[in-house]
Length: 70
Image (cartoon, rainbow, N blue to C red):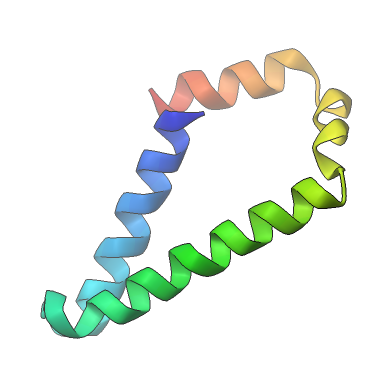
């Protein structure tokens, strides 16, 4: 799922930089905070073992999503 995360990352970074009038130095703390919170959520979801529910999503849906991102 690297391709979808690349697309999401690009949009998040571009949005935060745009909100800071294109100044990457001012946007950097917000960018880091977004990704640190995302990683924390990822860890918490792993501890709660919620990843097992991906089996409930039909394979064609997941495959179509990843293919569309490519």
